[in-house]
Length: 343
Ligand code: 13P
Image (cartoon, rainbow, N blue to C red; front, side):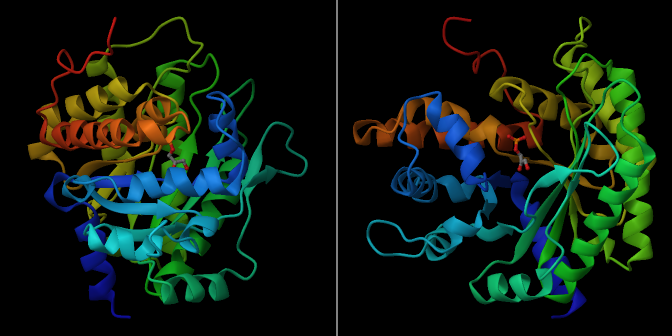
């Protein structure tokens, strides 16, 4: 695999104002979301849900790549097409989550380190053989009293960089996801400080491990006040703080930054991305895109509820959210027209 092929894939993932769709929830996370809607917690239900997503007509016009879970990349639609082929047919690049989850960090109560490096070279070769062209690894940074520790930031940055180097060796574009959680009562200023520290550590490790910045994407959190913080800044203030933080930390060689949604409402995730692009797009070295799971999937999941009769409505809801986020990349998202019904 040449460096140019990695660069081409990374650029394709942020081209045409499209974004990524994260549909790589572990079974436990998927079941948590299903349970709230009374959807059966079964492999069949997970497959049905993922089939609904990959067969939604028009999704490829606004989604460039989809991040699959190990179970899903091995599954087929009810007509016998592999999920990878169904995505290819829509012009969506298949990707794969390759970390094995955030586990308690020894000696650091309340913090985690993401695992999955053992055997990763072999797993990446297998996924590449199955048609995956990019991969994802999520490190978790938890704000709190005295947290995060330097140890937590450094071990997660180190793991992200080792993962990214292995991905590029295997010809897969690494999506590097250090997530500062929005759970908690921390302020926007504190989130900004932690995100800045984290991104500096991540890019220092990426450099140390020789990762080609032009052949990767960054998937960070937005700079937000904690969910329980009494002061909630405006959409514009979040946009300004997020872009300021990224300008201080992310090298211009990185082709794109695709945000995670992290538990924001679907509308806020679109509005904040929109504000960033509206205010700064012409002055930024990288594309500002999206790689949402909940903020794209949740309204569709709410519409589906596990009922075959709702499949078409759910597909429409899914494509609608993807379109809203494509509009947000263009700075054209109309938050008023997209207000949740009854709001
Ligand atoms: P959310 O957009 O729901 O935060 O998920 C993004 C993701 O891929 C988390 O790893």
